[in-house]
Length: 296
Image (cartoon, rainbow, N blue to C red; front, side):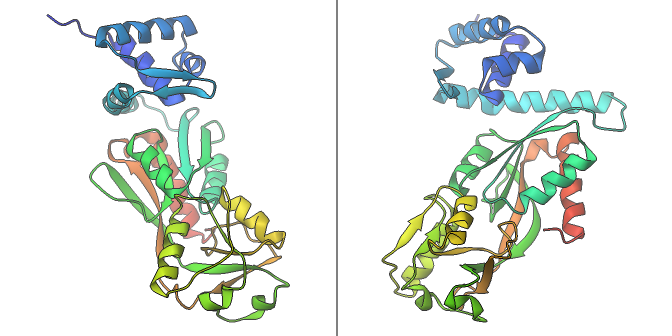
C-alpha cells in the first residue's frame, strides 16, 4: 500500500510554493523553517521527485511541483473557505493578497482604496507583461490579476472595470501634441516607445502596423509601463498606450489614433474557486466602489 502524505507536508509545500520562500512559509504557518524543510523533504521522498529548485531569487517549482501546487492550492483555498464560514467576524484584520497587473492603472487607485478600507491586509503587487500575467494566473501563482482582455475560461472569472482605446502619448511641447487626431503614418518619422516583448500593447501595435503596411525604423522597447512614461517625458519618443493606463502628467498629451478606434476591456481576473474568499470579495467590492466613483 502506497503511503499517503500528511496534511502538514501538503500545507508546508503549498505555502512554500505560494511564498517562493521557506522562511516566509514558516512565518505564515507559525512554525520553524526546519519544520517546513523537513515536511517538504519527506513529501519529495514520498513522491520520488524534486518539487523545488533552490535559486538565489527564491524557490522555483519543478514540473512536478507545479502540477501538485495546482491541486494543493485548491485544497488550501477550500480550507480557508471553511474557516471563514465557521468564523463569525465583521472586519478584516489581517490577510495577504497576491496581486499582479499589466499596467499601473487601473490597479493603483483600487489598491489605494483597499488600503484605506483594510489597512491591515498585506498586498504584494507586481507589474508583468500580459503574457506572463496570464501564465501566472493560470498556474495559480496569484490571487487576482488586473489585465486587459484576459483569456477567459472555466478556471477564471472576470469582472470588467472599464473600457479604453489606444492613444498616442506625446510630450506636450512636441509638434504633434496639438493635433485632434493623428494617424500611424504621422508617427513613422518618430521613435515609437512600446512596452517589452510579451505585452498586449506590443502585440496589438505590431498587428496594426502589418495591417496598414507600415514599418517603423525606430522602436524603443522598455521593460514596464512606467519606463515608457519616463521615456516619453525625456523626449525619447512617442508611446502607444491605452488611455489612462498611466498616472496623469501635465507634461504628456494623449491624442487619438485614427487606425486604433477599438475599445479594450480592463478586467479583474480571479481563479474561479477563490472568488468566494472574504479577502477576494472585499477587494472586488473596493474595485466596484472605485469604478463607480470614476476614479479609474
